[in-house]
Each structure stands twice: as C-alpha cells, then as structure tokens.
Length: 289
Image 1 (cartoon, helix red, strand yellow):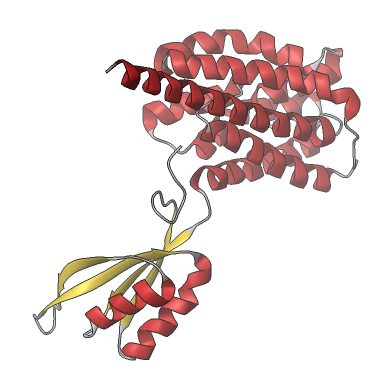
Image 2: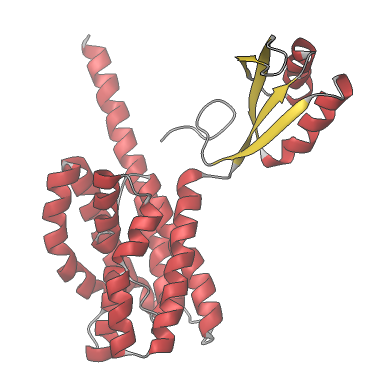
C-alpha cells in the first residue's frame, strides 16, 4: 500500500507541475499580446490588464504592478469559492502574468500602430493565452478570475462570462481615452472570448447519424475504411413501425466526405444526419486534462 501512496503523490506533483508550466506558457503569450499590440495602441480590452493600460497611459504606473495591486481582493474570493488548489494556481497565474508583462516589455517590439491589426492580433493572441491558462485549471486573476467564478456558479461559458465582466473596463476606456478606442476594445474582447472557447473546446468534430437497412455492412465499413468506431442506437420507423438500428459515429471534419462515400457505396438510399460537436473527449480525440 505504501508504494501506491508514493505513486499517487508523484502523479499529483506531476500534474501540478504540468499545470503550472501550462499556465506559464499561456501567461507569456498573453503578456506578449499586451506589450506588442494592446498597451502601445491604448486598447484597454477589459480585465485588470485593461485597467492597467488605462492607469499606465494616465499616470505612467507599470501595467504589471497595477494588475497585482488590483488582484489582491479577488484572490480571497477565488480561494473561498473555487478551493485552495484553484486559488494557488490563480495566485501563481496572476503573479507570473504581471511579472512577465513588465519583464518582457523592454524586449518586445511593437509591430504595428494600425488599430485594426492591433485589435486582430492582440485579440487572437490574448484568447490563445487565456484559453491555455484556463485549460490548465488556472487564471490570470482579475476579470479572468471573476469569469471563472461566474462559470462555476452559473455554468455560463468562460468566454461569455469574460465578455460580460469586461464591459465596465471598456466603458472606462471610452471615458478616459475616446469612443473609437473603446470600440476597438469591444472587438478585441469579442475576438478573445471566441478564441478562448475555441481553445477550451478544441477543434469542432462532427457527429454522424446513419440510418440504413444494411447497418451491419455500413458499420463494418466505417470501422475498416474510416477507422472510426461507433455506437448502435435502437430506433423505430414512425411510418413503417419497424425496429431498426441507428449508427452513431463521431469523426473529424476531414473525414466527413469519406464517411458519406463509404456509406453510399453500400446503401445509396441510406439516410445520413451530420451535426456539429462542440467538444469530444476520449479515444481518438482530445484527452481530458
């Protein structure tokens, strides 16, 4: 029994180490997005980082330092609602993010002063960074932590939660900068939220329902030629009243054409339904973290 306890502890430490590494990578991407696109172009795209950008341009205080000061009261709530493990990862994520923002600033160049390009690339990079942090069960603090709290209490997707809580910061940007910059910030937040959900949920797959009088042959062909498994669901035709099996299989986007081809080679009268799948966990797809 002792060796099992040691093995379990080793696995737990490895998971914590992996999560912290993932959070660090995500925070670094987010810090780069701020320094290269958002801070120099006064795009305060919500969050504590947006407040930091406003304070920086008004008073000259470092963005990272401002974020640390604002984040302190949020950590207490995060630990209380989400647990010590999440609180620790949030504290680490917020700290490393704030440090990297100020640390990387002198070494990163500003590639564009065009607000469209800054919004586009800043939003996408920010979404990738925050999405990676969320995937590893962390937070960069601020409204990201607030979004995680809303997600936990209400079930609202993280991207939508972040979009909601960032509205106030954008309003302040419109007041202290100008309306045009606030409009660019809104677009940035929208892009960020969409990319966050994309990173969280992975590449969209397709669920395929197949109704055929030759279900056994179709199922075997999918196993052998498409190399995908499936599940036989029990169904009944409403018109004929006869019982029949419905084949359900989940495939990648690139395999849809192959599935149709294989099915119609066997049964040209088969009925096929294809629908989007937001997330797939398991064999052949993304594994659960």
